[in-house]
Image (cartoon, rainbow, N blue to C red; front, side):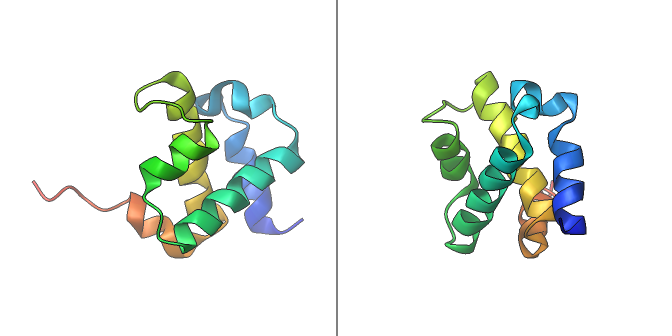
Length: 91
C-alpha cells in the first residue's frame, strides 16, 4: 500500500466519515479513486459527492459524509486537486 493510500484510509476511518468509516479498506479506496477520476474529468465536486452518495441531496448526512471522503481523496490520493478544496472564499 502506498503512503498516500494509508493516509487516506487513516482519515477515512475517522468519526467525520460517519458510517462510511466502517467500510472495508478496498471499498474506501475504490470510492477515493472514483472521486479522483471524476476530479480529473473536471466534474463539479457537488456532482461527484451526489453521484458517489447514490443521489444524496446537499446537506443530508450521506452527502456530508461522502463530501468528507472526496476532500480526503483530493488531499491524499490526488493532491493536484487539493487546492480546489482549500481556496479562501475571498471575503
